[in-house]
Length: 261
Image 1 (cartoon, rainbow, N blue to C red):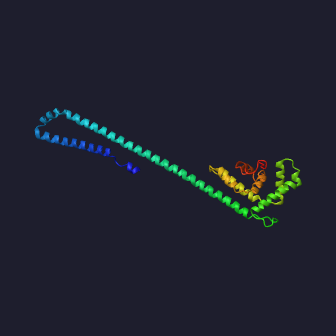
Image 2: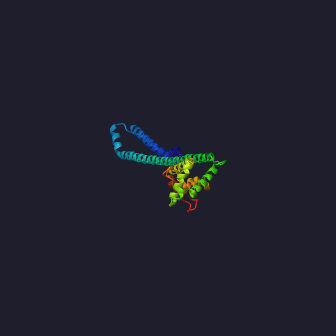
Image 3: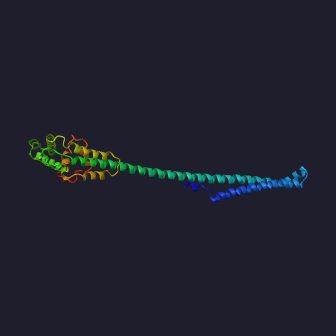
């Protein structure tokens, strides 16, 4: 595009040809004048008298010289205008390249984010599929999580230390303590995986954070949501765990009465 614009325009070629033609004519006339005067007049005095008669010719040539200067200035102005146009076009092209590069960076960042995010989900599912607890019989994977929520509900209903608490949150925290005592460490990695996924979304520069939060929420069964609900107020997992659970509305499918946060 730029190379095409740099080619001489027809009007520029005509102007250059006209200047060459004018100065060629002037040079030819000047040479012819010397020849004619030398032939017609023998003495320098006669030649001087004849030259004085045509003093106006000197003024004419001076005018032509001045006109040449003006033409040169006009051509220079045209050349500068062309250069300015080329510079403006270059700036526009660089601006377009910059916008395209920014778009590519955004797409690349989103692609990298999604690769990491879905890998986190994959690792989470792989961990769930291998969960086994001694004493739970043949239960494995998500069936173990379902069994966990049954065990937890039994603690809520029958444990005397839990029942002695009057506040709902205090009962949940006491039930958490008893559950972790009976099944130490069995859900630590499970909750840590959820926390890592939510923290990754929160700390990223991706625009559609709520969309990816909904994708994460869609991975949980109702039994998992109940477990997350009970442990969302437990700061022993992480001080930001409950905050992120609430911010991304992970427990939205539970009734308002059941939700602790």
